[in-house]
View (cartoon, rainbow, N blue to C red):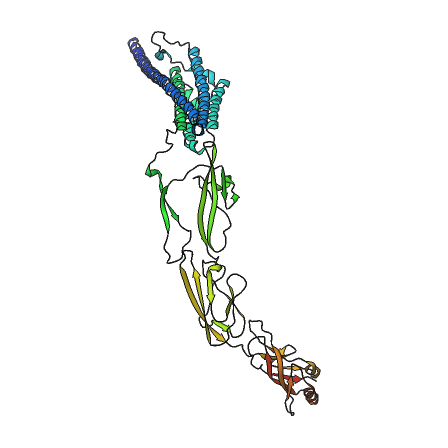
Length: 521
């Protein structure tokens, strides 16, 4: 149709095609414009009916507020505030609709009461009034500011009361004015996406629909204040099975005890949270599900209680929900238990220190008994002082959290104190010393490589010089007879100190091993 040189007849045919297509487009536009007009009429009728119902609900609330002030005075006050701010916003939208009709010089038919739907095809009325380039005009900004104010006013009225949380979320969704991505992937402002480039009847219908949203908001709020609305469906699909154990730790072989309940996580931020007497910072403690994270130092070994309160705002008053729970503390493993089955030994007559405990049971619920065993100072500390026999058995009983007993026992071999070594000048066995050091030296008996602190006192010993009879000395030093024999000994000769007898504060001690001293002068 567009190529080459066309004849007069062909040009006439082409013109007829263009006229036909234009006529089809005009008919299609009229149908679309009429459809918008019918939708606008339905919204308008709905607004009238909803206004009447809302008036009845508000009157009912006000009456209940007078009859039952404790229950309905605050809801009635909130309903009145919602009615005032909604009416203001509704009337503001009406002024936008009036301005739109004036800008297009549209009038309502006085006989039918209808707008000239099919004639309201202009797109430049709001385009010039609300938009300039990629920005909004002052009038466009004023429209967005009015919507934002209405949203803030409603949410301020509802406040932080947990009963209104779902209603607040639904209201936010109904008046969501965030950016929108179109089919081409371009982000547009809410006002641009919904109003720029649309015929006047489409914009007029959208404004009437927004008025309907205001009336629906009023109805929802009034029903909520009257208690006629369930914010969430009471369906078992909304619930979860939650296991509540009687305690958070159990012993092997013990029966599990607890409950399984149906419940839901409440994503509601409390106004205050107190645990174990300490107030918790809500900004850090509450997660995305509304659960409160606990973080505190545990108590001593054994079963412990958790106490606290959740505080929410409901009906304008603080609502406290108690927190009650328990947990079991077991000893922290900070060392390995390593034992040789053949080396369980205690020494006779010595205070053998012992640690006795039962895993997961506090010290005050553990009892240990045996011959020679007594309680020491500190948790799990005992002293064992065996006397007679070759073995001793320690029996341990514990009372578990459920009241049931547990017991265990262990047998230890009883050994005598090992034979001490003779010592002089800090030396044992065979060594060399000057004659004078031997004469004034002190004979001692020591328990070498013995882990217990057991001081020994030498009571007597025998002294022998080569070629002379042995001399018995009392105490721990040479007597005069022994010193005389020492002076007669030759240089380089060996003198012996043997049969060294000693005593301790407890058990009987065997004679110490002898020492041989070479005289160095």
